[in-house]
Image (cartoon, rainbow, N blue to C red; front, side, top):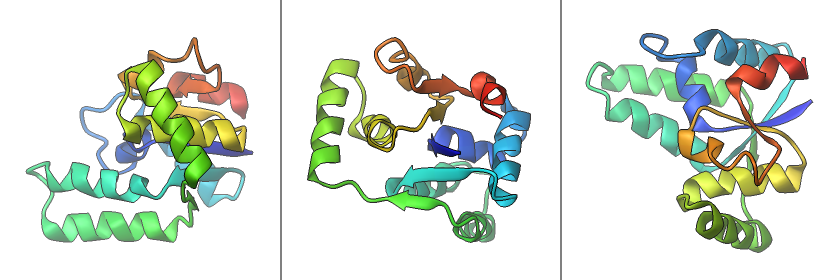
Length: 143
């Protein structure tokens, strides 16, 4: 099964304190490690995660390098947006009142015909427009 995963979920793999739905995020990670799941991410996914940990004071440089290395070893399927996908993301950004970064996840899920799992509240507000947007709570239905 293919899924698109946004950074709000993957951050939970490394920052388990004070996070909701960590067990589901770790279940997704485990399914990927067992090759039961293909995780599709845009190229900016890695930058978003590294930036999240760079800006959190409790993570030092070594921690961030270890997180980046762990992400690299997961062999996620990286999607590089082309002209069509980027134009679609721009339309989604305007209609969904989202950043281009968040819209890109939706556009990729749309073109890949895969569910997008997220914890991002702004993206989740667009579930009615895009039925493939799912919260982590909905992941177990896909197993």
